[in-house]
Amino acid sequence: MIWSLSLLVAAIPARKELPQDMLRSAAALWITNILVFASWYWRLDAGGPRERELRGVHTDGAFLFPQMTLDQQAKREMGEDRWSPGFVDYLFLAFNTSTAFSPTDSPVLSRWAKSLMMIQALISFTTVALLAARAVNIL
Amino acid sequence: MKHNEATEIKSTYRGGCSRASKPEAPMKSASQQLEPRWPAMIALLSVGGLRLALPRSLSAGPSWTLLVVVGVLMVPIVWAHYSGFDALKLWVMSRPQSLQLT
Image (cartoon, rainbow over all chains, first blue to last red; front, side, top):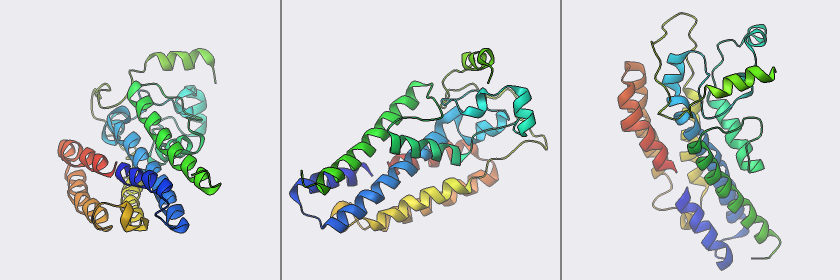
C-alpha cells in the first residue's frame, strides 16, 4: 500500500497517468488504507480478538468505545452487559479516521494507537489532498 | 453516562495492545460470545482484490500477487483458529500478513 501510494504521489506531478486511472488508484488506495488499519486495530487492541473473547467483558483497551463508558445498569437494559468490540467497530473507527482525519466517537488512549492513527490520517490526507490539487490543476 | 463511573473505568486502562493484561482464566461458559472472524477475512481479501484496480505502473509485480498471498496465508490462519493453535496464528501468520499488506 505504502509503495503504491509513493508511486501515485510521484506520478501526479509527472502527469504520467490518465485522470481516470489516477482517480481509480487513489480510491483503491484510500479504501485499502481503511481496511488495513482496521485490521491492525482489530488485531492489536487488548491483545487481539482471542484475548478479548477470553476476557469476556471489554474493559481494557486502547480505544474508549461509547459502550465502555455506560454504567452496568444501562448496559444490562440494552442487553450489552457483555459487550466487546468486533471488526465492524474497528472498521468504523478506521473509516472515521480516514474521513475526518481524527477519531470521532472513540477517544484513543494508548500511544501505539495514537501513532497508528497519525500514520493512517497522514496517508488519507496525502491521498485526498493530492487528488484535490490535481483536480484543480495545481499540480 | 455517569461522569464518576466513566472516570473510574478510564483509570483502569493500561493501554491495550498485546501487552494488555492477560486474562485470569479462560471463560468457557455458554454465555461467552465468540467474535466472528469472517468480516476481517473479507476485509483482507478485499485489500488483495483492490490491488487489481491499480494500474501496472503503480504496483510492484503482477497485480494478482497480493490476492494470492493473502489467500494462501489465510489457510493456515483458519486452520490454526479452528484447531486452537492461537500462538501460531498470532505470531507466525496474522501479524506478518498485516505487515505485508501495509
